[in-house]
Amino acid sequence: MIYAVVNQKGGVGKTTSAVNIAACAAGMGNRVLLVDADPQANATSGILGRERLGPGALTTMDVLLDGASVAAARMATVVPGLDLIPSGPDLAGASVEMVGRVAREGLMRSALAGTAAEYQHVFVDCPPSLDLLTINALVAADRLIVPVQCEYYALEGLSRLMETIGEVRARLNPALVVGGLLLTMHDPRTRISGEVVGEVRTHFPGLVLDAVIPRNVRVTESPSFGEPVVRYDPNCAAARAYTEVTEEVLARG
Ligand SMILES: Nc1ncnc2c1ncn2[C@@H]1O[C@H](COP(=O)(O)OP(=O)(O)OP(=O)(O)O)[C@@H](O)[C@H]1O
Ligand SMILES: [Mg+2]
Image (cartoon, rainbow, N blue to C red; front, side):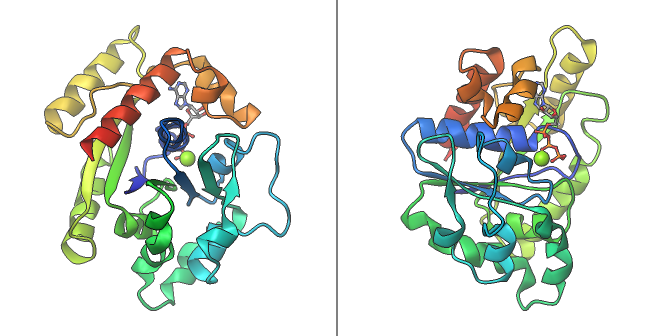
């Protein structure tokens, strides 16, 4: 199963969710691949511990556009069972370079086609845009996870995203399913958080995952140690919520 973690709105918790759900899925005994499809490379730096990418490391760019195999580009992470195809700044040019390619929307789908033989789950961390890189993830994916931050303007952009998902489904990937909207950075002390939860559940009945990720300082600390929070502090509230979300996402199938 290939999951894309997508929302063109920035800073809503895509990378945090991709990294932690992938880590939880691996912790449950699955072989899992995380694909960093964001030139910002936050997922890459957030999961490699003290390691740094070597100068010759292959990245998602090489896999999508230069014919590098998943087997050649993947690397082990701090989480047993979880491999990573890293990103780097070179990926910033990917969207532009893709434009000139044949079947440009299907490059990621082709590149990941063989992964099912080895991995039970693949998670793709998308950039905050609806550019060709994200479209490639939508075409490659079976399921989408859409993080929604419990803040003002949470719904902003969601209808545009749903339209894009509809177009991709109609033309390129009929099997694409929204696996769940995931409410992130919930703060029970603020009224807005509760309002957003209510609003999103009303607008998208049946699509919102039950588990809600609380705002938690341990989440902000963990990337500087190169670890997902579910490993950095498995008992904190956010880590426990990510475990619940992962069970829910995998159970939805
Ligand atoms: N549950 C949480 N509690 C506290 N801080 C959080 C939580 N989830 C995410 N954050 C913080 O919010 C910021 C944005 O999160 P993240 O990088 O996961 O979002 P993103 O959607 O991937 O951003 P971008 O659009 O730039 O790729 C980060 O600094 C992250 O540490
Ligand atoms: Mg991100």
